[in-house]
Image (tube, rainbow, N blue to C red; front, side, top):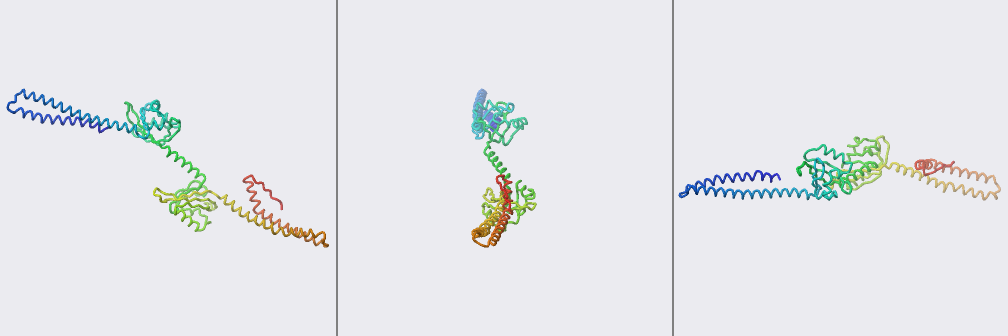
Length: 408
């Protein structure tokens, strides 16, 4: 547009000036040369000068008409290009009055994106396409008007259906219908923002439930989340720059860690239960997932570790193993040590009525009873050692078990 104006305001007068100077210079010289020829009278000179003037006016008028027509076509073409760029732009665009904030011009993309017809837009202002929560921010922006190009990110707009969506706004000063206005382009970023919000929610949920850390290819910690620091007892500043040996309890053999490096080095996920050590020296167990992280070139450039605390589960497994051993011993005593004296008692009771030496049988019955009592004491001791305390603890924790310890 500026080039067309320059052509119209400078080029056409310049061409007219140069053509006029050349015409005057060369036509007058030619006229004087012709008038000096024999037989030319003064009247002939005047007549030729008049024709020369008519010819100049005709030629320059024609030249000006051609130049003006070309300039007009160029201006119209540029104007149409700008009009087409506005009207056919795939992004919503509008022009609004800086004083009233009313829409003065909208393109097809804006009508489609917001669901309003053009006539409906022209009856509304900027507040109509925003949720009420955005009103204060809009007032602040228009009150603190900054001339020139303005870029604002993450506006929340809404369409005719009331469904909100996110946009980035690009605005610039312009003049339309002899009014100071602003031209706006709105870029829909709703998909990106929704994805970012979902990622943030997932990240928050993960950070709340899991111990997360990120290491470089050498295993040096570059990031540790709050949960990791809380459980390990270390501040993030104490962990960053260290490797995970800082929490290594020494429980697992070297081959355990070699297998881990072999697995993640191949780009696979490695999972295992790991016993770690806190800063205060106490231990905790974590169910650990280590995942390779790829860059845009599909090369591994870091590792992310996600750990879930399973100390209680491991303690339960440990206690269950002890309990199983005690119960196995209890079952052995029941099936072997207790059956012997019981069988003898049954045999002695069948002989009691026929055997003449009653005192001998009574002594044998007493010995068997004492033997049974000794076995029962051992069995109760086995239960007292682990089973009853463990079951009592679970009763207190869950409130759904009712274990009553029987007297020996």
